[in-house]
Amino acid sequence: MDRIRLIGGNQLRGEIPISGAKNAALPLMIASLLTKEPLILENVPRLADVKQLERILENHGVDIAAHGRRAAPSHIDGQRMTFQAAEIVDTTAPYELVSTMRASFWVIGPLLARAHEARVSLPGGCAIGTRPVDLFLYGLKELGAEIDIDEGYVVARAPKGGLRGARISFPKVTVGATHVIMMAATLARGTTVIENAAMEPEITNVAECLVAMGARIDGIGTRTLTIEGVDELHGATHEVLPDRIETGTYAMAAAMAGGNVLLRNARAEHLQAALDVLGQSGVHVSQEDAGLRIQRNGNGLQAVHIETQPFPGFPTDLQAQFMALMTMSDGVSQIRETIFENRYMHVAELARFGADIKVEGQVATVVGVPELKGAQVMATDLRASVSLVIAGLAARGETMVNRIYHLDRGFERLEDKLSRCGAEIERVV
Ligand code: UD1
Image (cartoon, rainbow, N blue to C red; front, side, top):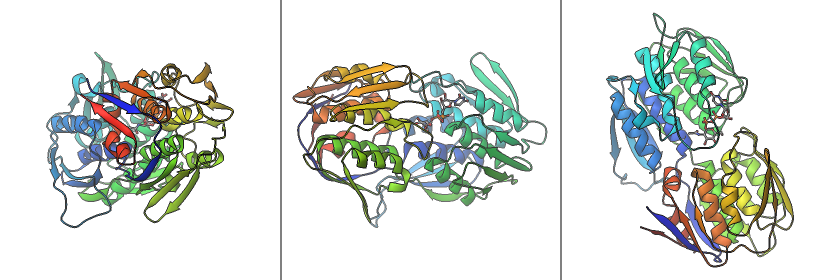
């Protein structure tokens, strides 16, 4: 199994290109199920999760082509891919394919809307809490679907004549269920109103793609989405937005290691809450035309308290990385995780570097230490694993991160991007 070996202590200097966002690419790919015409996506990141979703979509009948690099140089270097679901040949998403990635459950919305039936295995994915699907099922039932659970599968059927518009009010903000209900509602009869919708930039990116495909959606970027169903959607070309979690991760890496890094293509407005926190801790952040510049000279890091919240708050997907940064702050930082229970599995691994962290319920208290020491550590989930890389960048001596398949699910060429900026990091196979 691949591992990552790094020697801490080098500052980061140079440029890191930010890839297309995994959390937008996946639902955008799934949106291709809504039309028989081709959906062309630009800036698709090269990730294990993207590959896995390709397999799932192919099973439903989606033809997928990845195009070579375009002749003209462009500001993006992600893949250009075409997805065409001329016909839905199978409405079952089997356990073997769905169990490794939670977002694959989301095919249920488009399948139900277009083929009027879906049989989708209950999801797996990162082990960060129970992650139920009750809110998906609530929303789909409101749209008229009949739902049974059968041998670990959700079996959903649309009523005669297809899904029908409804008012859906989510009791808590959920990214996945917002994507699914929004996609399903584009082909439902009548008007759907989604209240307390997620407004993450990835939701906006997907909504804009759906509009380009002929959907009628109002309130994009707000807590209330109003969707007027149409008879069919058509093809479109759409660009995946830059990955704000990858951006925040490298921003924290640069803050941890010190130095001066330009995060090419990154946009501050997608992660302002996290950048504000970095600013408070003494890191210099500035938006330039080409991207975000992160600088820290040799000064100490101030301890800052954070609480994870749905967008526009501090993202839960940057919690582990921020905790790694705070292990070396001058003071005590309190971190409250409010989105997922059990999202502190990195704590035990960070302790191997000599970090001082205590967890009580939702709150982790991080007492800054003057030095971390390199260690053998284990990646436990996608974002947790990259927090170990961040700690290793500043730790004295050698760090070995085991089980890095989690990293490959969500970070494109991580070791390459960091080593080009001066980090001593390599993949050991
Ligand atoms: C998405 C992101 C993930 C991020 C998370 C929160 C993708 C592919 N994944 O995950 O990286 O960490 O948003 O920003 O975009 N919940 C229920 N019932 C449901 C659905 C959700 O109780 O039916 C709960 C979850 O357990 C969690 C909270 O709602 O406590 C938010 O989850 P949600 O926003 O749905 O996360 P995901 O869409 O799975």
